[in-house]
Image 1 (spheres, rainbow, N blue to C red):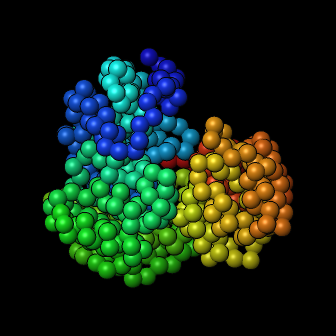
Image 2: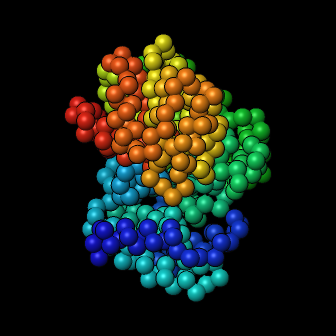
Length: 443
């Protein structure tokens, strides 16, 4: 099997004719059955499990980098990928090789097919990917697997793990059709990753969400460490070079530099510190030097990422209101007074109206386009939503033409932003990086 064959098989799982069962416990039953057929690799892993609405991926990468700086072998699985499927399964910062990917698909395919005759149908694309990541991490003999939850937490495929530390990043509204339309309902789903007697690192939360998490920890006898209470950001200075912050942890003070844009990244770093200190309580030696060194080398593409200047060129996957709010706050703080030209594309399945209401008022020009996805919102429909907010709105369905149009309209002192769906931003980023040879290399 080649890498192309492997990816075609995985993609077939997205379009498979399977029973459309409700969002309930059958999801984990199906996942556990798949893993049982594969030898239960998840039981052989020591892990950090990260749920939340905003900042999951950034926090996961930060934890992974620090653990590597401490001399540990680290597996990392994040979702979705930006450009290449292999980004979803990494060891020590390196995506899985094409040959290993093909080998894993050959290994899991019989187990996936064996489920077709069962009432719940075959595992999904995401479930199969998670199982493959666990297998790869076992084969690679990782010391710790850092695992990002997909949707929710309680019923997510990753929640078969028994993590050393459960991490909950900021919670807000997303996937309300599945998780509930109140913050306490969503928080209950996220809090499903907390284990009896476990350790929990928690980012600052809205009061309703914090109450649920604190109550869950109390009921389960879990140790809760909260950012803003137990771990404090004592100082934060964002700039175009990144974020300099002083974080007072439970065990030490950390003076850190993050090569990522936006004040919100200091919150993610403090959440990572809380998780890492809890790992130290469990016997892992990390220390301030590894924290400083690991955070200083974090690279996380398309998260308010500056690709170049003249014009300032930013790419960001602002695909839900929370992530778009972070982008807008960064624009306000670091690029105040500059003209903003935005290329913008969304999926119909996302809260595109709320996202548009955040972005469009800050833009002088909005070029609406259509991401490469069956659920994409057509450019003209997105443009209609944006027109009440921005003085200049165009609909350019072709993504390459949309970026070219924005480049033509952006002056050397302006800010060119490509944002919205992963499916748009990843593709546009690759083109813009080729256009700007001095842009940072993709991790």
